[in-house]
Image 1: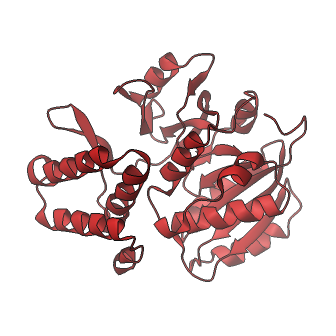
Image 2: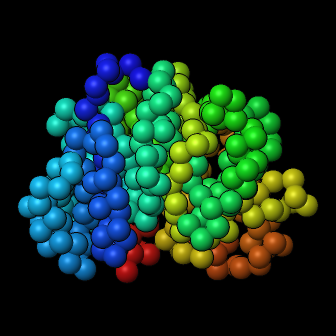
Length: 309
């Protein structure tokens, strides 16, 4: 790290109507040595989250708990935008970012901190029911190989790191210096792709990025990420949620156009067409996806609202 021998470390958690998950995560974080405080950004939950946070914040066990309620649901993107802003304003040198459904293993923060000289780095995100499986497959640098198993990621590491790869925002550390250099996550993305855009922005700025393979965050399985298609030549990230599918198609179009160029945009569109006509035929989902892509090209970041319940 470049923040001195005793950096102020703040955890930022974004939550929305998942109090049972928050009840297990906050006590876990309070056991982590080295944390100055925990900021929980509450996306206007209606399940008692606010009341529980108020009661927990009154306690004096472990690092301070700061509840930061929002007046409406701004999604993960809005939540991380706000949480990172508040953490830096409150003097954080390092910010530990995570959703409410992840659960860092004990000493995961210490394991991350054992690796210095980095700007944006995080753990392996493993399936809570099968820790030998990665929830979010990793595309290894310098090629097209994608690893789905924890052991394969460990074998790909050098000195405990897979450089130039990180899975944000699942237990990742980001330095204050990097935030000041590249700004905050794009809150208009709502969900899906805001974390990837932030990594791409960090990469463009020359940030030192890595995954620490000995650090772990456990996470529930999510959809069919990395489903093979085109005879196994590539993969597609499918979600059963219309909201997630819409945001993925819209935000991925925006990210690819800005950071990779039109050939990558066209390939993504071709993959979507292939997936929903041949791999998993679904005309309704195909229409939804192409409507989202059109909105992305237009810069319309309001279309996801029709899928909010």
